Image 1 (tube, helix red, strand yellow):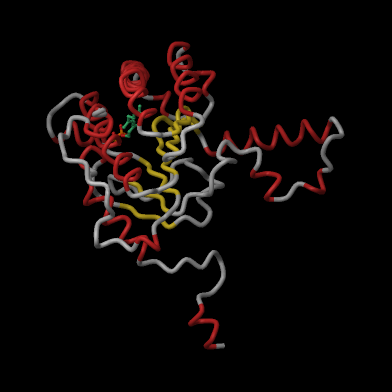
Image 2: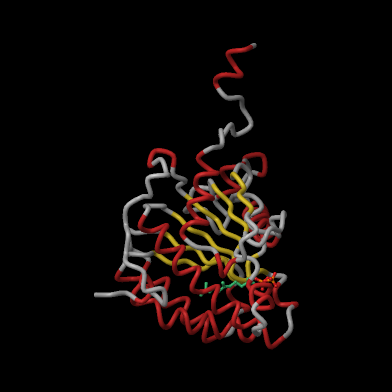
Length: 264
Ligand code: FPP
């Protein structure tokens, strides 16, 4: 069965092997992406912003396909932040409709490909029809063993932390939890990402150098790759470049690498 998700509008042949420039032993397990620059891409092409978002969906499809082929375990993308409601009403409505139509069109194919889809964020504030589709999609794909694809929708890192703190406080008030026993492990279990390892690599497109309230807890030790490429132009080469950059880093997690420790 040919899946439009994995072939999409690109008509590229399906290449599943890892590019030779990448070391299979040093691949990240979890990649997080701030997909930025749809609007600027559209403006440069003298197109409406909506066209930038549509083109952004194509980039996302391709990126998911590459990550799945290259056996990345988790891909988490920032689709709509808690702050994005302040955009013009027409743009917000367009984005909600776009999420609905993409989900409707792609979910069967994602399922066939073994993708397990999740939506992270305050989903109650989304349009009811979108909420319904999200529930169906999560339910349909929950036992799949392929890549976990997390779509952060109405997501804010600060809000996630506040909600986690509220849940712990409620348990403490009920006498179910001793506040002295709240440590990082206990806290982490209340986060929306509790089933996943933290991102190893954060990619942000369009050159902005900030994390914009994305995965504030989870990105503590992520390697950050910022590219000037606008999200709709992000392609296989851009992803390979990000991965080569990631593989060139020495991850110390606050410690020292072996060579430095021998010098003391
Ligand atoms: C940022 O570009 C992009 C967004 C706020 C929306 C991202 C959404 C998609 C790519 C569609 C995803 C679809 C699904 C189903 C997950 P911007 O508008 O902030 O660009 P600008 O900074 O250049 O104005």
